Image 1 (cartoon, helix red, strand yellow):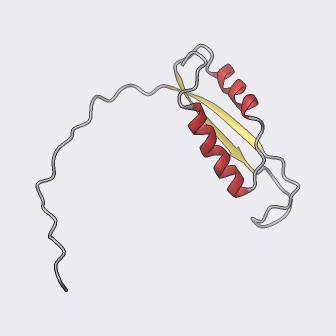
Image 2: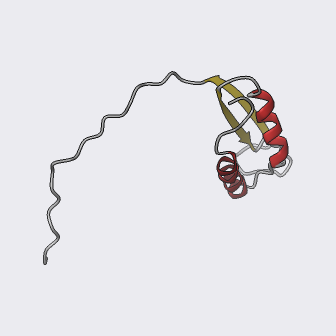
Amino acid sequence: RDGRCALWPWHMERLERGAERLRIELPSRALLLDECRALAAQNYCVLRLTVTRGSSLQPGYAPSGLEQPRRLLVRLPMPAPRGGLRVGQCEARLPRAGPA
């Protein structure tokens, strides 16, 4: 909202963990935050940041090491509120575990 990204540190930590597991090099946190802020500067919106390993001319799924990571940043309108949640209490009881 207005150039501020809600829960940014948590989103970045998750992205960094995933990229590390997949061995995808990310741009700096500062660059990603600047890009997100610029896209959301005057809007109340949802941003979706997707990072891929990039394209390769090598066949198969194994990384060749020649890929250049790509990022796609999409701005979507904030969804309309859907109302509240209905919460109830389950009446079913679980059996107690007894001797076998």
